[in-house]
Image 1 (cartoon, helix red, strand yellow):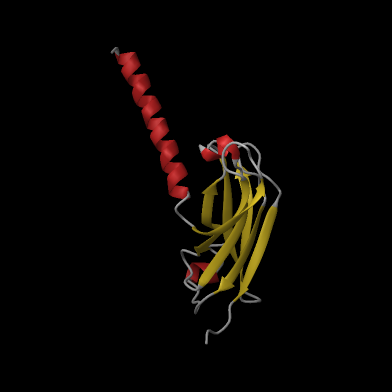
Image 2 (cartoon, helix red, strand yellow; image 1 turned 180 degrees about the vertical axis):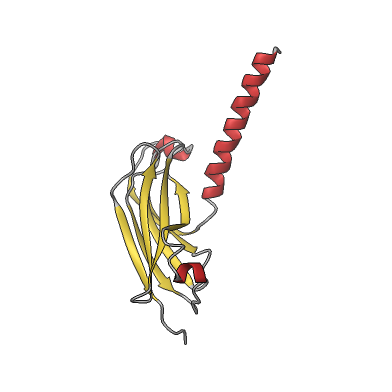
Length: 165
């Protein structure tokens, strides 16, 4: 094997490992709650709406539920299909909430709290958090982005911070 062939092999192997790491690491962030089929596919899995839950990594007591489109078929089964940008979010207070100082003072506004790959490369579904100090409310925004062109489809949910019983 020549040096050029070895270099090409290692470059391809490195890029493949990075892609796999991104794909699998982003899919471990949420707990699957359930799904429903929306479109029958003769070959491969049906198109679905998937419901997932995740806890805000910085704010104990805050949990969000996402519903999102999942493309089926053969391409979906092998992980190369691109999911649509359709998603909805509902967040709730599930325990006592104490806000970290960087959230209270607005320094963490727009911070990513969840990210899920929705295509083999370059497209993801994200959730970012904001804080409204006047109303003492956490706001979660979900949207889809792509390196070249994102989508204006979005959804928000709020958690008014209340004393926990």
